[in-house]
Image (cartoon, rainbow, N blue to C red; front, side):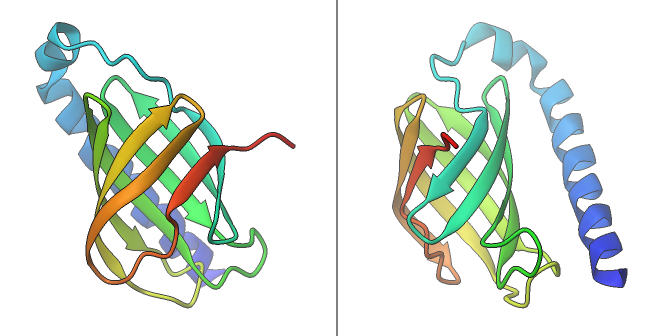
Length: 133
C-alpha cells in the first residue's frame, strides 16, 4: 500500500509540475498547433501498456508491464515538436525496476510512434501501437 501511495504522490507531483509549464507556454500552444493526436492506450513491443495523455504539444504517460504486480512501471513527460517527441521518463516504485532517462520518439501516425534514441538508463520499448482490445 505504501508503494501505491508513493506512486500516486509522484504522479500528482509530475502532473502539477507539467500543468504549470503548460500554463506558462499557453501562447506557444496556440501559435503552433499540433497535427497529431496520440492520446489513448498503447501497447508496446516490451510487453507493456502505456496510458498517454496529450494536452496541446505536451505528452504525459504512465506505463507498466502488468497492472497487478509489474516488474517495471514508469511515468513520463514530453513535448511534441513536428513529428518528434522529446521525453523525460522515470520508473516509479509500483514496480521493482528503478531507472530513468530521456527518449527521442518519432510519431509515425496517430496510432504509432517509435524510439529513435535514448540517454540514461536502458529503456526497452521501441515501438508503440494504439491498443485495440
